[in-house]
Image: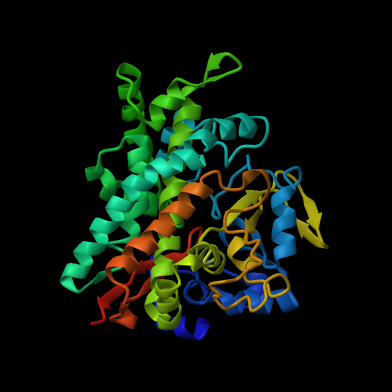
Amino acid sequence: MTSEMTNEIPSGLPVTAPVADWATDYDIFDPQYLADPFTIWDDLRERCPVAHTDRWGGSWLPTRYEDVSAIAHDIERFPSGNGISVVPLIPPGGNGEAVQGPLLSSGLPPISADPPLHTWTRRLVLPTMSPARVAEYEVFTRELCRRLAAEIHERGEGDAAVEYAQQIPVRVIGHILGVPEDMSATFTEWVRDVLEFAHDEERRRGGIVGILGYLQVAIAERQAEPKDDFITELLQSEHDGEPIGLPVVMGMCALLLIAGIDTTWSSIGSTMWHLATHPDDRRRLVNEPTLMPTAIEEFLRAYAPVTMARRLTEDTEYNGCPMKAGERILMNFPGANRDPEVFVDADKVILDRQHNRHLAFGAGIHRCAGSNLARMELRVAVEEWLAVMPEFEVSDHAGVTWAGGQVRGPRTIPVRAIA
């Protein structure tokens, strides 16, 4: 699989010195890492399963399933409340801090919170992401995917990332938040600035300012005139008999945007790329639709997009690795999902894989609360595309671009229908 990806061109890269040794000097923004992290993980598992780098403030990169899972569950030594970003946030004193300070004093709960804040904020979001509610969102999602796929099919060609994958989650999340559909492109750019261009201080600040500025106005509007959306639900929620504070409302809404858009469109985009470049899998899925449940789990495993982080509050040690306060542990869920000690033929996509305890949605108390929604969006996106265009291929392999860092996935996938 990795050899088929060498022609892809990563986008959104900072200018950094070449990596000297991946075990002691890795860089998750390096072009080689973005284009083909799989061989790097394979190498590290053999000679240095928990790598270290001084780049981006210093961090550790576990590559084995056992280590990633263990660290994810150990919230005492590896808490989330001290930061979940893979790179340092905007430096103190910057304009971003002025905006973040009063509005995001609670962070992005529940994902960036430790108990007890994590416990009750997660409880608040779960009803919105329940199977019953997700089934309601599926009606909107299916109509959207059907329309987007038809538009590309009518032309006979298009971009399966820009015109399809990247259009779905932002509109679904917007639908849940009550955001006008004509704001989709704006939100897309803001989220990309926060995640894809996290290393670019100015772009990250602009994305944060944009998201928080919009949400501040939207919350004020819901306070004056409640609507049938997630923002209003939060404003009407209580904890210990009291309304939840506005910083928590702001943080939870911002999390829904940041965590629910780029992550899911990257999963959809990676799956579209796979189907466009693996005709046997594509045709099998078309001819055997009962494979869809296991296929979706396999795409999530093989192309898990998200690397979270835990920032250490004090010095500690893990398996002989002396970790210092302030350093980050990169929760390398994608690497864990490729561990051959856990998954047979880990680097192969096996549509009917039966044993698949992947970590695409994380592990422990911070396991993704929106997993039901993400699964539905990915499944519906594949179903509706294949219903309209069962035969398609990449039309320009050099035109396929990937981005990475916190979230890895294709940003452009030029495709054409096959007659």
